[in-house]
Length: 423
Figure (cartoon, rainbow, N blue to C red):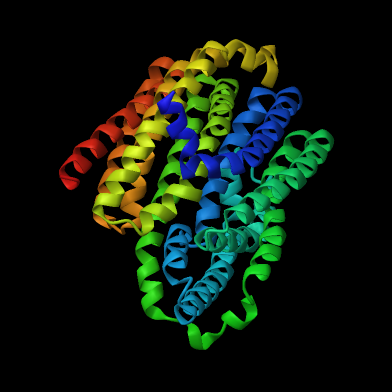
């Protein structure tokens, strides 16, 4: 009973409860879309959706130059210092604006090559890449404004942005998938998130007089330099992770067929739904806390995370494993039954991923760049080596086996590092 009371009394639980409706809505909408995708596009279409999803993840990080974590950290630090806060907003706005113009131009020039790599087609899905280029500024500034609001610790507003965006995005996605099948599903992925820009803009203008803050005279090279380490770390992950998953998925398509790759993508979609509970909590609560914590406070944050979040997550994934057949029948069709064989290793990998998240986040918020790069290179190297050979022998099961092996090794490495750091 004391354990349960402790959980209900924590600040993260109150924030999690506040965010619960948003997460449940997102999961609920995602489940409906997954069912429709299963009916309309099948495993083969699901594989293409997976490639686009990974590529889009990279672009979203690029759209803010990977500044999100740095924006949250410095917004927390500067919210009482009007002059520094103005410098932060002006520096980020000007930098992102110039970058997006040149980056979008580059994507447009190489759009045919990108289309061929993602979809093995140069013409049929080129419109998707054009839509992505169009959406880039909306991605960038919606993430920027949401990060600012998060850094100002206006958690309710962050939740409202998510809820409203999910509702609008769901309706939009439903219309496109029902009318245009695979093409509609891909367009929905690209265009639906742009609605968050308008919602985030509304809320940020209620917090600050944004246009008064954005002036060239407030541009500060020192702030840009401080943000650059966050950028380097975030962009490294944004490039490496999704590209490795695209490579492994394409390898799986060539080895076992596009339907088998679709089974892996279906398992990844299920994983992304329940992982939302932890990832949203980390970004909303633990990231701002770690950003301003000293060594003793950091230990307390870690202890809180492993005593509360991890046990709850473990119980959740055990329930998911024993109801996997029901989950597949609800979310997909009989055609997706082979996905049930992928649950064990996916869930095992996700458990170690959740265990490692808060430790890896410490590298980010404390700007421990070298440690971050070493750990990330280690994990990505493990993933691509184990994944390549495991897929050769076990097809889709090899992909989830590599996922589990990677995060077990990654968590073990981080434990060794932090045992020494926190002594």
